[in-house]
Length: 183
Image 1 (cartoon, one colour):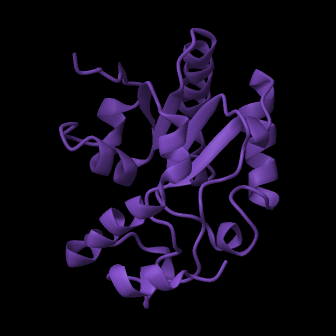
Image 2 (cartoon, helix red, strand yellow):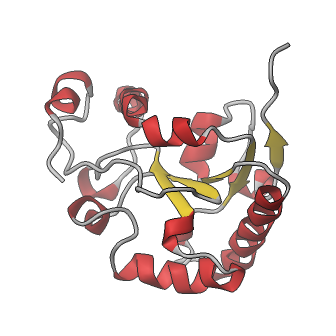
């Protein structure tokens, strides 16, 4: 998808990154995944509507009776960064600019949050598969209890949404907490 003019004007990476994607469209998601950034295919077609998305659906969703239509896919960064490298330094301000596009994730209104590995990296580290599967299974349990679970996938996402979670992803993988409502 072409990058909106808003991004070119308000994002430090607006002119130095490729493409753009919104959250996936799904009527009534059973869970949400927040990934670091879209793949090149995600920005051309749509989130997870490519060969990799089909493979992830088969490996990570079907075992729990889910399809891609049951999962809201959101991104911390909405464009594909140069050479696929996540922004550092002052370019991290791009992550705040991307929150402008979180309308579907906000409408989903998560009530419980979990931390797990990034499924796009699992093919590089297959030993993480079991942890991701357990996280999806736990998310479905939360959904059956009436919650709207979201899985924060990967170090970058954990660090942005949970700055209090110091240390690496290995330390926090599998950690869940509920949204606390103000009285």
